[in-house]
Length: 265
Image 1: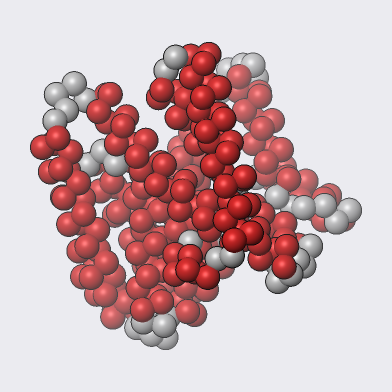
Image 2: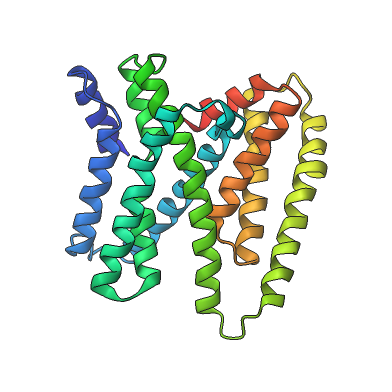
């Protein structure tokens, strides 16, 4: 974190995108881990894994808060074409190319989805720094990213279900349906009971940390529930963000949403 912060200061001085610093540090640490640089620190990889997984959950929660499903009907033809080129095309090429080498559909799906991820939040950060977010090209990139987000969420959900059928030996359709309806019940209770209750407690004039605390409780409960019922923390984190955004928009609590997004950023 210290190195990333110092590198950011260097990039800022030369007007380079600040997103590059943490990406470079992450790649460097990954390279050093693969080559045994941290072998003298007991369980370093496991400790780092805790932070990495937690960071992944928070990022996916942030993506869930940023997904604008109600904008889908207003998306342009150009955005759709860009989304196909940026997401769907590398997915199918990655899928078939990997299958040719491995003859394993699970591995091929992993590679396809990894190549399809468009990293919209990185693009938004770069566009904001270049002051291009409100220009036509910026809007096209963001609109294409919305389509990409929906594709990625669907693909990850389907992959999670597929992996369950491979891992669980006594897996049955009844087991899947039972787990699905139990998880769905928890999600509905969170959306229409717990979130309502927590918002009444904090009130409409809550402070920033109170809104963030509320969001964090929702995130942890849904993520834990998703893990218990085998739908992965990734799906839980995305759902937590989408549910909270839906509630904020329904009650027109745009200030609360802004506080949470700002804090996570």
